[in-house]
Length: 221
Image (cartoon, rainbow, N blue to C red; front, side, top):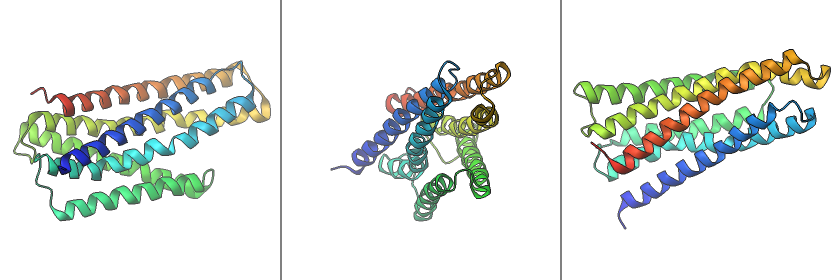
């Protein structure tokens, strides 16, 4: 069996579980802003969404090292051993970071770890965008133009993930105030506005992922 078939299959599975689970998180956010539901119901929905969110984050972390194996198997890039080691080190370390954030949720440590994850996403996103642009307009390492565009757009997916975290932050305070003070037009307005802004970032990410998948499958240029 050709190795590119195996790594391609794993790559597809990661995308399926990433997007499939993320849609669950998306719907949780939509229902959490419904003011006609009780706080207990909304809190349960949000808790479920946060649990589901572990799966897309894990898949996101594994895309990088698996993508390296697939690129080598397809002959798109001659990946050196050190890059494989770095890729799997980042992937495994990222998963450990995600688990640590979940285990320490609500603590100062979780805040620090979340900030570390935020900057990790920024660094990786910039890396992808830089490599893609360099290959398109300069003497970069990627020969195929479609592959360079794919890598560049995937870098923007990281930026969308960062935008989601930024947009969602104002949601937490007014939502938790519902438990103590109950619903009010002001709190509900902040919650709705925050969720709506977050969903824009989510939908943008979905569009980018769909485009990345199209480029990888169709190779249009």
